[in-house]
Image 1: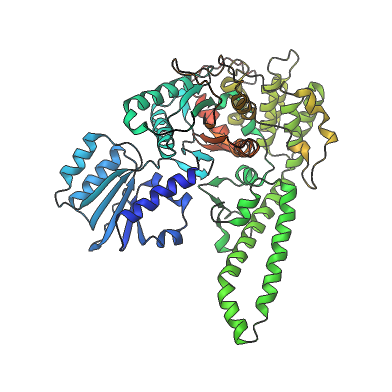
Image 2: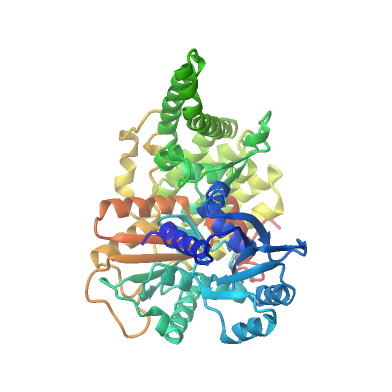
Length: 562
């Protein structure tokens, strides 16, 4: 159950089936992202693919009949139209067509009718219809999937296709369990089951184990995506945003041209692969070790005195250049993270976020929030997030002061859009919407946090919080997950404990949850868990998700500030 391996297998097959010779890869916007996450351009060149085209652009290259065209597109109505037009006036010699998902017979007929010049050699379904972020993590790239707290129909359809593609690519036909409190989870489960029965021939796999597809809803744990992060990958996404493995650094003062956009890919960057789950304190140390190694090698390269030295230099230079690129990239990224942490006082903010999510000490926390709201060095958005966490935690607490905090934010000049978010999150995920009490889990154990100091730099007080997903998956692994809260769809039930688990989060997952899954996979040999979400959130994108999800709803929560 390795998502990267599954998708690379498809892409390799595509490039090999057309035989030797120069090729062009014709894709759409989504499949371009899918391929770019898996391969660097130089790796694709090695597969004799020298030209990349988009099917939705009208730029015509004349006279390229010597090229074989590999078409890799999603089977959408628009793409079928584009492809029919392409086949009526073919630019290339032969066409090998691969759809990233199940295609309707009627669409195949349309393509056959358009292929008057008989240039099509192959048509296949290769189920690469999702973004494989890591071997155990996938996204569907849907940033806001609901409106009025119900599915946007377009996004529901895309999510069904994405999940079907994941199941087909890893060759699993699962039992389905879903979060009972979520209308969206139930709807998605039913839609998946419809496809599984309609396309049952495609799902006849020899399975050694009985896999489970567990569908959960972000609304049950709104805390995880609101928190500052302190592990490398999650922190980069929170503070700089990772978009298809790319990080935009063009805003950094004095940045060199080649570092304006950097690629962080565990497949192509050894340092990143080894360190993406380390905490910020440890990263400082590993960066120093990387620098030392680089300086040693740089000194060696200065001594080019004999022919043998020259030969050695030429042979090792590509590796040296690669190391040099890795060093400058990570030093820049970590440097920028450091300056943002310092500039925005994020250690101070994060400590209070952790206390709000893990402890019950109302008067002390209220006092601290008031102080931070009045501190002009704290960013507006951080102050708002603290009030959102407070509102979630103390919503039903008799003497809560949500309105008082909103007034303080208002006096500070915080925009109406941000103020509304406090009520939006209660609408999206208040105590009535959740089936779990997020704030009572192991509360007592966490009060001892100050006794456990971690490594230098960032210690455990900044990483006390564990996502709700951790508890849900542990219960599922042990066979203790409640059938009331997570029923099976239909009358089928598993007798054995699951070995293969695909968990999907409607409303987006996070890198903190990805780390949880990584750790559970390590701690439970024999069990494989894959995590997916409509998107991978940081706090900024999650706030957009909440805004969109609650738009058009008559709020139950009274905003006394208007």
